[in-house]
Amino acid sequence: MFRYLYSIIISLAAFFYNDDVIVETKFGKIQGVQTSKSRTFLGVPYAAPPIGSLRWRPPENPRPWTGVLDTKEVKAGCYQLACASMNPAILCPKTVSEDCLYLNIWTPANARKDSRLPVMVFIHGGNFVQLSGGSLLFRGEDFVSKGHVILVNVDYRLGAFGFLVTGDGPRDAKGNYGIKDQRLALQWVKDNIEAFGGDPRKVTLFGQSAGAQSTAIHLTNGKADGLFRNAIIQSSPFSIRYKTKEEVLFLGDFIAKFVNCPAGDITCLLNVSAEDIALAEHEARSVVTSPFLLELFEPIGPWVDGDEVKMEPVTAAQSGKFENIPLLIGTVSEETRIFVYEAFKETMGLETYLGILLLADPIKALKLLAKYPPVKSRDCRDTLQNLSTDLIFTCTARNVSRSLQTFGHSSIHLYIFNHPFSAKGAWYNFTFCEGHDCHGVELPFVFHTAHLGGFHLSPEEERLSTELISYWSNFAYTSNPNTGPHPVYLNWPNYDIKQTTIMHFKTPKSELLDEYRKNFCDFWDDVGYFI
Image (cartoon, rainbow, N blue to C red):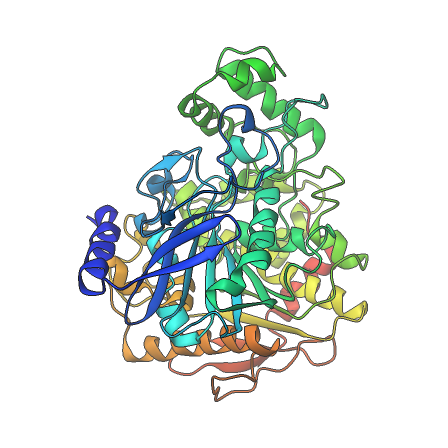
């Protein structure tokens, strides 16, 4: 049912508010929809369709058009398979296509060309293989109405279409195209957003999960300088290594073989249908290319090519090679629960838990066991969740923040989100997330979109959502979440090594915490984050 809800919403909006609005971009005029909450432009092309000879090529500007382009409906999401089997349905696109390099733009209803509003560019997550900026969960009407900012959601090439590597030849696929897509989208925003009422000098880049990883890449490769002035990193799995050249070539050979092409034969691969490429990539996700256990969380994605991805973001932070701009960084309290419980649908015995520790790192296994002893020997899933959340998310976020402080980054605000969504059924088939803070739980509060999935926030949750939008929007206005057009009742201090206070977003009221998970994070700082 929810798959068709989006079309119903758009049709109702067009029926009740038929005042179309036209904006002229550098490539041609577009026509969106004016509603009581926002001006909405859906499916705005920021690049030429990456199809035919442009498959596995850097993105190019769209061709200019004549007349007025209709931008009233979301375009297909980038090609992907089995989204709903791995994510709540509200996150998944209705249709998919290789022709997917589009933006969805929302402005406040009263925005005009001279409004000079701050702009927030959102990069969605999904392990670099799924989801879409056009998903219902990321709709921007309420976000821009409440925050009085402009929101731009980006679609970028996923899976094999965005990250396939076949070799070093002039026509070979060289990967990291999804990152290049995102940067071209940022350039489009800089060149065009003023026509929508935005200020190109006040762009905030933010992303969640793989989108947060992408944000960190743009902060470390030096190629996006001047395209945004501050950033929000939501739930970045900093401890997951990016691929090496050997690993991505191995995956590329597997995909080629699966579709009956010789290894590295880009000419053959270019003639394979998008559906077959996607199926091959889906199969490749189960291929082990590395001794590092955390690779299983993200089997295909960016690789360290020395250009787009110069190094791991953790390493960049620890070596002072992270762009010095204001940052909000945070995680939720049970990030890995959804992954642990999806992988182990039945109880996890002590032997299985010990085996995972040994597989992760035979040398450190005893230290890990001593620090995270099983609470219930007959089901160790919660213990594994605590360990992996600290390792992959919480403690690396602290480590990155502290490392940046040592290199003079003075504007970092750290948070933990700790509120289970109260609505029953909101996690769809992922019932083990009911009453828990699973990965992504903050998103319906940030965007205020629970109602689009047929769910409702309690009064306390409404307050929490307003609080998040206020801090995020203030940050877009002033680079400080505490100051701007939206009042906040609690001053959120800068995080540093001496002042270790973080924001604890929760109900009934948020609060400040000091030394969150200190004992565990000190442990990981000592033993290291790549296992």
